[in-house]
Structures are given as C-alpha cells and as structure tokens.
Amino acid sequence: MTDWAGHHPLDNSRRRFPPDGISHQEIMAKLDKAQAADVDVHDPRSFRPSYFVGREVIDLICEVQTRVVEQNVLYAGSSFPSLREIERDVIDFSLDLLNAPSGAIGTVTIGGSESNFMALKTARDAARAKGRVAEPFDVVLAHTAHPSLEKAAHMLGMRTRRATSSIDFQADVSQMASLIGPQTIMIVGSAPPAAYATVDPIPEIGALAEKHDLWFHVDCCMGGFFVPFAEALGQAVPTFDFRVPSVRSMSADLHKFGYAPKGVSVLLLREAALFEHQDYRFEDWPFGHYATSGVAGSRPAGPLVAAWAVMQKLGRQGYLDIARRVIALRQRLEHGIAAIPGLKVIGRPAAAHLFLASDEIDVFAVDEMLEAKGYSTARAWHPDSVQLWVSLNHDEAAIDALLTDLSQAADAAHRDALRARNREAVYSR
Ligand SMILES: Cc1ncc(COP(=O)(O)O)c(C=O)c1O
Image 1 (cartoon, rainbow, N blue to C red):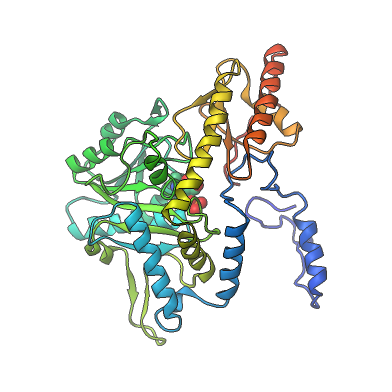
Image 2 (tube, rainbow, N blue to C red; image 1 turned 135 degrees about the vertical axis):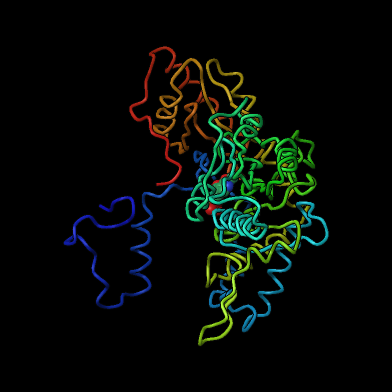
C-alpha cells in the first residue's frame, strides 16, 4: 500500500532497487500484471476521458515518438534544430487556429497546468514591471476555474478571489466584477472549464478586463483544439479566443483535443513584447547561457513531434470531421437522457463530455448501478453529477446501450429510493 503521495508508510515495506536485470519478456509480464486493473479506454463501456481518434493516429504517434526518443527539446538550440522548426510550426498553427493577431507569440509546455502557471507568472511579472499595483496581487477566477490556476497562484505568491457559484452553470460575471479589488491584476475565463463543460461568457469577462486594465487569460486547455471546430459546425458558443480584444493570453492543450500524447500544450501571448516577463535567463553559470520559457528544463521531444505530426495528418478538415462525429454522439446521448424521467444534463456541453444530474433521484446510485454493469465513469459535485465522455471509441450502438442501462438504473433508483454507498467525487488523487 502507498499513501496518496506515493510514499511507503512503513520503511520495511520499501521495494528494493532491482539487484540484477531481467529479460524483456519478464518486464512485459510484469507490466501486464501491473496494468491488470487499469481502465480499458477502448471498452465502449468506458465513458471516462478519451481522445482516441483512430488506430492510424496512434500508429503515427508511436512511429514519430520512437524516432525522437533520445532527443531533448532543451537542447533544440544547440543540438536538434529540427525541434526548433517543429516547435515553431506547432506554435504558429495554434496561433492561426485561435485567431491571434500578427505579432502574437507562443511557447510549448508540457501540459495545461504549466501553461496556466506560466500565464500567471507572466502576468505577475508584467504587473511588477509596471509597478502600479501593490503586492500580493489578486487573480479573479470563476467558480469552475481549474485547480491548476489556484496552484499556480499559491506557488507564485499571488491570491485568488474565486466566485462561489455559477449562473446556469456558466461564470457569474457580476460576482466576478464584485471580486475585483485594488490589488487585482488578472482575471481568467475558461473555454470550456472541465467542470460543467460550458464555455464562460468570454466577451463579458473581457469587457471587465478592459474596464479595470486587467490581464485577461483564457484557459482553453480543454477546448483549444475542439471549440474552434464546434463553432465552425454551427454550435452556439460565445466568442472565446483572441478575437476578444482584451484577451492577453490563452492556454491550449495539444494533449487533449489536439489528439497528441500526454506532455504537450501551448501558452500563447497576444504581443511578443509580453514575452520578456515569461522568459527566464541565467548568465552566470560555468556551463554557459541558460534560457527557458517554462517550468521544465529537459523536455521530451516525443509529445511535441507527435502533436506536430497529428496536426498535419488531420488538418483542419480532419479535426472538423472528428468534432462532427463526437458532437453527434454527444447529442444522441443528450437527447436520450432528456427522455429518461428523473435525469437531466446540466449546462451547455461544448466539448465531448456532459454532466448527468437529477433533482429527483440519487445520481450516484445510478452511477453505482452502471459500474456494476462494467461501465466506467467519473463523478462531480455541486450538484452531484456523473461525467459521461464520448469519443470515437463509441458508436451509436454503444450510446444506445448506455441509454438503456441508464433508463433501467434511473427506474430502479426511483422505485426503491436507492442511495449510493459512496458519495465521493475524485478528479485526481
Ligand atoms: C480547463 C482546464 N484547464 C487546465 C487543465 C490542466 O491540464 P493538465 O492536466 O494538462 O495539466 C485542464 C485539464 O483537464 C482543464 O480542463
């Protein structure tokens, strides 16, 4: 047993460094054993997050990752000029997709949390350079803002002022306005947040940012490579990107709907001049110049090169086709749920996931019945809800099978006034 931090509570249970090497075959057997209890992401009864868009994309990812397995993005400038070029493509493609004006700039990071961290750090240092606001600086967040923003503020010596509720599962902009104080330098909206999946009213938050001269960051980690295509398909979403003039930075994860493997995201800045507040340089080291623009030093080339390869394999048309298929599956699920007495979908889902809730029955009891039938889902709170995430692992038959099982479970929960044994919602532990 390990505790949450992976530490062994008892020293005598510590596993020993392997004394002798073992064979490839033995390692694979150990891996099979270790993975036995993992969620099978390709099981059509898994409604947990999945960005699977087909075997061909996975094969491409594996091939390019193998090619660069020994490269380090940290040494792009000295040893691997290809990575510089690839990084530049990835940034330019992202700026293009998110309607950044000319003069905008970007950085590749290892994930959404790092992109958000660097957005706060850059805003903080820009505010310090201006010197007009006293520290500690405040950041105003919507109720649903991702915890990585809280963590970043905590690590950077900033304070968050978080709205305590949403309106109709969307950011409560008037509450956010009331949280702006003399030390506020930044405000954040999400497109969409992971919680509720409903895009925040970015133009309205942008108007607040403009009025109070705040750094406006849009956390588009989840939606950066999905919402542009949903919008192009005619889905109703607020304008969410650099078209809103006060947006100063955006984070967007390639390892989500960019369909790249984990370990790649971008942070985009409206103006190149802002980059001086992001960049870090150290010149007094016996080994020479040190410059990085993120938290990491060494960075794996695999996820970056894979993102670059997938963007080019799919192109705008490929992303659009995937979004069309995912939205059709999600809507089939939404309409089916609306027809089941006692169940409802909250908010206005903008990506691949929705939250199932109920005013009449215990939705966690419904979740436990699904679990007993081999389904795998995630849960959320405020209100109690079950996250269902559709992907190209599903087809219409898989959605219809879920709807049948949901309907039976809702019926039983109603009839027998069932209550769940476990009421926990866990995002990460
Ligand atoms: C809106 C939003 N922001 C930030 C993050 C954090 O991203 P990561 O887990 O890649 O660090 C997520 C992750 O789901 C997210 O949905």
